[in-house]
Length: 252
Image 1: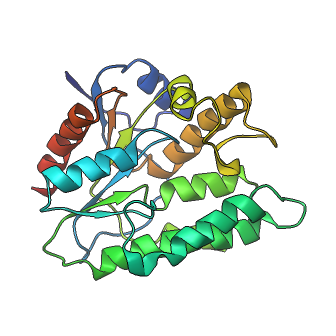
Image 2: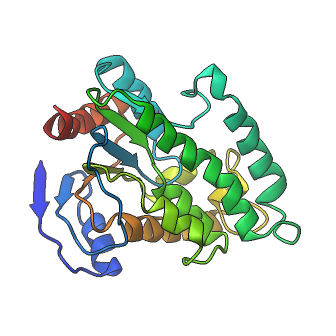
């Protein structure tokens, strides 16, 4: 089932209400006012796969890599990084182990600077891509910017202005899951890192609250882009197929 809705000028609450009412559907929204200021002129065609923590994006990207090798998949997930980019794994480990839990020792700007290594890597890989080969980018800068804001970085941070100038995707596919489903997938907090919940320890209520705020912050970044919401399923193959159909429409 598919629903198309024109959502020009809607509020954050109305966007989230649209998501709440779309369980089990694929919902496409048209362009609405937002902060994205990049351009797609002269860039390789690409779409972004976005979603909350533990939505299953990496699993879907791996499935797409097997089923649709004609598209390039770009991610900083450790299971999808090329060996020559292993440094990003080490930086991520230090970020979540040393920086994120120690806000007294490290500023939100320092945390954002470390996160920027992943953001710039995704941009660099995109710009190095063959312009004839469409790409699917994991999260792009949207999720990273949202997490930095939740960690305390000001929205007027000059790094954010630079990220928002990056090439514009043709479409965003938002792979949605409820906070409770994500809580179960992370083994009730056992697999969480400090950038996935509020508070010093991963507790259910603080995880739910963080994921709700994260979703709002991500929607702030993509509200001027065409977005298709794919609701949660337990079957990654069928989820990947739903996403593949959207990608075929956009990337061919």
